[in-house]
Image (cartoon, rainbow, N blue to C red; front, side, top):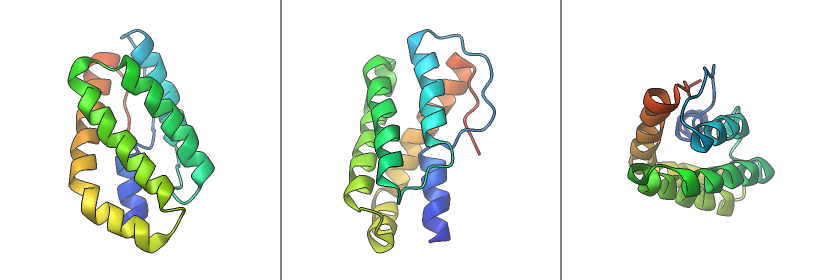
Length: 122
């Protein structure tokens, strides 16, 4: 389960120190998302709901080159929520979608740092 927790933390972008943001609504919404995923426990369906709500907002205001990445994050959140905290299902999800969600998260994180001046990390 530790591997799942580590993957989820990386995937869902646990927030560390956030610096000033300079990219409009998307950047300020990105800060809200970072707070929603801070210390996210994927077994907590209410916390996943909050994170998913913030991700939906971001997917609408995201730059065009990140729209597909946000869709990957939202799809992953749907699947994590459907697992209803079941460790075995969450491990399977991490195994099946881990590479795809890691790539999407990396693209989102790079843009956050480069454009919004937001550091996202544990």
